[in-house]
Amino acid sequence: MIKLAIGLVLFGASLVSAAVLPHIDVRAELPSPECVNAIKQIGLYHEAYDASCTQLVYDCLAQVNGTEGETADLWSVTSCTTAATCQGTYWTVFLAQCWNSDVDDASDLPHLNYNIYANIVGDCAWQEGGCSSTFQNYVDWFYGALSAVDATIWPDFSTVEANWDYIVGWTLTGDTIPYTNFDDWLHYSYTT
Image (cartoon, rainbow, N blue to C red; front, side, top):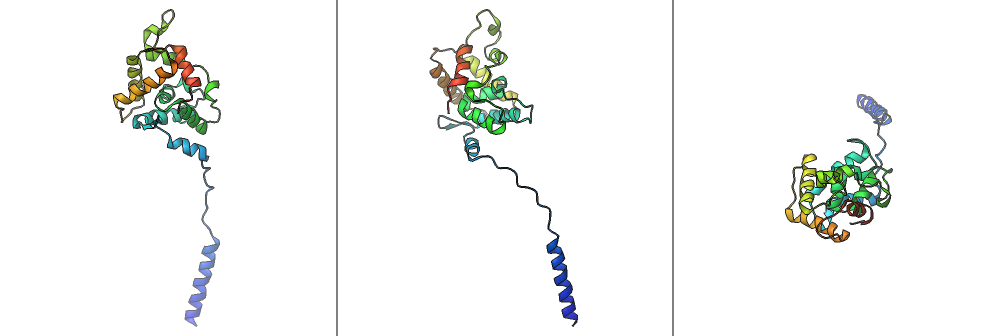
């Protein structure tokens, strides 16, 4: 009889504990399959991976999603503009749209912030007629952008050179790139 009573008490206790379920939070919304694919493309450009580029992309996305100050104007953020040069404009814009639905398609984004271009070319940007970016300007700007995001991984020089060559090849402006051609590349190249 005592065993039966103890068994009934334990059975009753198990029913009470089963009735008191823990609070379960609602499952977080998962990114779309397209955004998951875009995340897999971070740091890839022309089938080559650059770990240093991922640092620029992550900083760009922090700027876009409000972590570091929300903006939908990618080409007014140095890390976004620089990230586009090392992973292409297509994935940079697509990822930004995954984080912030207010980001326009590349061709509809505002023009490149001229202050960013001035950071690339230096004081000559403010002279009458401006000036074009050289390869050395681009190298200094790229490494400076990595420094600004406290990068811990640095690219091979050949990777930076290849990124420049892709842009020069698209703009067809010779060895230098004027502001308007770089701005056009950001808006219309859709480089993956």
